[in-house]
Every structure is written in C-alpha cells, then in structure tokens.
Amino acid sequence: MKNKIQPKLNIGIPVYNGEKFIRNCLNSILNQTFTDFEIILSDNASTDSTTSICKEYAKKDSRILFLKQKSTNDSLWNYNFVLQEAKSEYFMWASADDIWHPEYIEKNLMFLEKNPDFVGSTSEVELFNEIWDEKDTSKFKNIKPKKKYEWVHPLIGTFEQKVKFIFDFGRFEYTYAIFRTQHLKKCIIKKEFMTWEIPLILKILKYGNLNVEDGVMMYKYMGSNPPDHHKKLFTTTKNYRGFGTLASLFPFVPLAFNVLKVVGLKIFVKHLLKRFIRDNYRAERLVLLDIFSK
Image 1 (cartoon, rainbow, N blue to C red):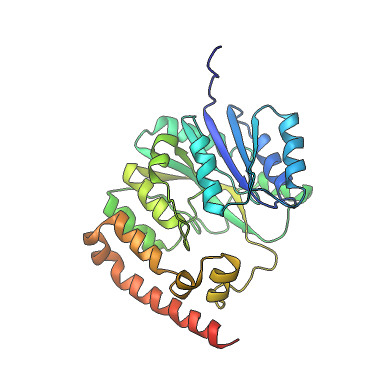
Image 2: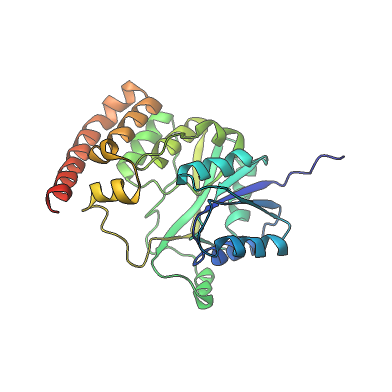
C-alpha cells in the first residue's frame, strides 16, 4: 500500500457544541484560494447538532478528516489532539466560531515559504459580536484595518526583545497563525490554566520571528453578550472553566510560573516581574470582590 501523500497544511478545528458557528467556519476555510490542505475536525463529544453537521461536511469534501471523541475532555486537550494528529509541514488552529478571508492561507503560506527565519505568520484581526450571515462576506472586499496592528504586531528580533515587546504591546492574538508544525509540536502546553496561550506563543518565539500580513484576513468572534469575566473572576474560573477552588482563588499564578519557566529568571525579573506582581494583585482583588459580593 502506498503511503498517503500529505498536504502542505493541516488545519486543526477543535469543536464542542458549535452548531451555531461551525458551518460558517468550515465554509470560510473550504473557500480558501489555497487548496492543498487537510482539516482535522475533532468533535469533543458535542450534545447538540454539531456532530451531524460535521459528518455532512466530511461526506461532501474529502479534505475533512472528522473525528468524534467518546467523552468530553477539556478544551486544551482537544487543541493538543488535533495538533498531534497533524503530519503536514505547516499547521494552523481554527476556532469553530471564527471566519477567514479567502486569501488568508495563501498569503501567509507564501510568506513562510520565502522566509525560513519566521516560524509563523498571521494577518491583522478584526473582532465581531454577531453571527455572520451571507451579506457579511462583503467585508472581504475591503481588508484595510480601522487601526493598524491593533490586535497583532510583527514580532522580530532576539528572544528577549520579542518577549519585552509582546508584553509591552499587551495583545496575544497569535494562536491561530500558520506555524511550522515541527516547531509548534515542541511548544505544547499540557495542563490548562487561564491564558495558556501566552506561554505557548512565548515558546514558539524561541524558534523564529512571527509575521503579520497587511490587511484584515481573520475575524474573531467575541460573543454577542459576553459574560463579565473581568468582574466575576472567581465565578468564571470555578464554574465556567471548572478549574477548582485553589486555581480559582489564584487564577494567574500558574501563568506567572509558566512564563517564568519559558523565558528564564533573568528576562522575567528584568522585564516582567513588576507586571506580574501588579496583575496578580489586581486579580486577587477581583476574586475577593466576586466572592464577597454574593
């Protein structure tokens, strides 16, 4: 039996109860101008119609590998699962409720092919709050951002320079960039905690720079009625995220320790220590306010 020819790109879509969004997500990916990819679609034991929708799309397009989990795992587990299944040269995660411009993959892959010192590439990002309908694709005609580099910025230089810049910039919307698979697999975060994406991005920066293509080509869903997470921090982590009492009482301590482990003591003390002391102090105030306001 001949070995299966691997596509250039694997797209990992972890999904759970995404019936409202998954069609738009899959349509925006299947309509890409670049076509040499395979979608690894992992349903985390959904209880709505997600499974039937995914099967419908997998039946229509052979580029979709649909995998249904027997039981529901935490979100990070499913993210890691689709990455571990990837065998292509490049990989990108795709959130089930986000949308991509038709040229997102083509432009970012073209850049990475020409620039081996870059480990990943993405585009500028626009946030949205209502589920897209057909007329919303008109946004694809004008990709000029309202504000350049509002949510992402190129990360170039030494590792220390990139670490300092990204924390000064204060935005970490790089998780859905296109990465070189071999490097991304070395950056897996195994245990979920608040903002686990931050040390993941810091890890990948050790392998190269991150590019941002001009123009908005990724549209990130933020929810029509987002919960007031910043004021109900304990409730969010304990009930919504299921982190347990200790992790909910100290929600950003695991982040601090993981960032320290990735960047090292010297860089952490020099650039990040005061920031983490301040941010953890603010977090503890919000935790206590949430607990005692009940």
